Length: 300
Image (cartoon, rainbow, N blue to C red; front, side, top):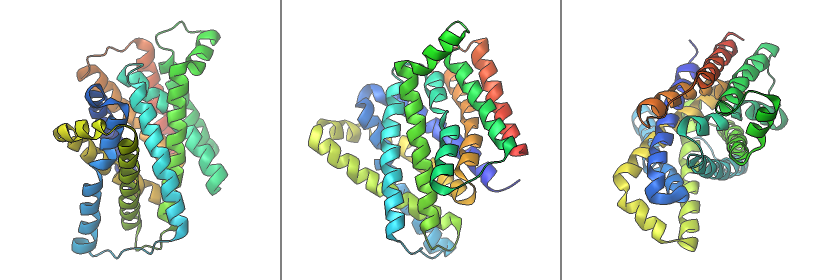
């Protein structure tokens, strides 16, 4: 098995764990505060990770460049706003459906990767991604009559548009992060991904702190008071990001994000066991289609 595959599965699990924790935090912190903890509490852990790779493993620091900084800022800003949209989405629909909407990302990531990076996909890979996305569409209309009209409504309603926008912006951030890591003149993909992670989370922490100081300082106090729960979000978030960044330094974005749809398996488990949300037959069928798309992608 190629290394990027288990790394991506680990990233998907950690991302689902982080999202579940953020959903719980939103009621006490609000959308922006619940989004900030991902970066603010993850930044110190990212520094420890890079320090370990450099001091213990012996990896040299890569040379930074203006091109790297540009992609890191683009990716950092895109991830901030995509996270805010996703956390807000959890207040509009249940956890599973909210996450499912954002899973249109693989096709969008493939498009962005093609346009911005010139990455190409095989016919089999494209078909596998489309099968997975069809599964997402089936989930999105699982609570309404199965018809062309309900499909149109499910894809053009406010909730769907927020979810699709979140997925699209996440797709932009994924392409930007891969571009940033590849722009580094580093010793290996692991160190390149780790340095990218530190620089991005540091920028995101400062950006959101300045934003909250300028608009609502009380939000910072609420974040500090919830440090126990918030630190878990930061830990899961930074470990997940480390896995994503490493996988995307090893493999094109579209393949990594398509395999990352395995997150929906973890999402349904969390929705069922943690949030006590029940699933219907169409949601389960959509989940099976997503898994089929993942397997088809790997075979392709």
